[in-house]
Length: 106
Length: 121
Image 1 (tube, chains in turn green, brown):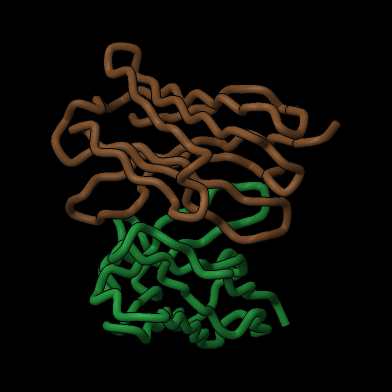
Image 2 (spheres, rainbow over the protein chains, first blue to last red):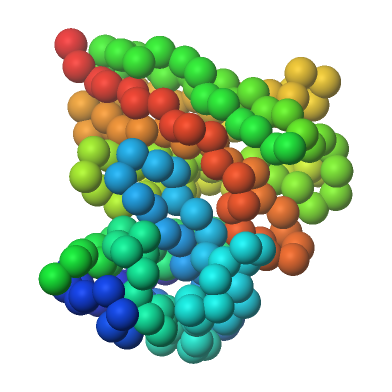
């Protein structure tokens, strides 16, 4: 089973700052990596698919990059509504999620 | 408009079998490329994929839980059913069903609201 390791576990930033979240796979997943955002009490929402493609309706401040084993989600300028938990998920071999990164207000 | 809703018991005893039903609308599970999956999330913890069934009845399971899971679909009723045997307190979680399409995203674009299942004697 492919293990996804996200870092950091918690990221404390202020609105307007740039956020960089990392996801590392235990083996290559090619570009079959997605990012989801989850707010308390809500189901997750798809942000990025296939490493770098924004899902429908996702603001341009969200971008994804990477391939193989190392991936990054970047939020260029944080809005108040962006503070949430972010999960990466691969679909190269079955489907697994990372353990999540909590993005909190500093 | 695509919607999904999970139903089933909120409380099960250890060793019992859990049966959850996902009732959906706004799409057909006989349409090429469509799938419905089950994902769970223990309180305060990460998401975990459980099972996935595709329009062509291809079924995939979490390798670590495969022996305990069965997923089926009833296209005429717009339902997908997940059964999990030998429930344990560590299986306490919110269980989500979700819609996905192989293309273009391959990801989950619609989720149910989730149902909290507690395993306790």
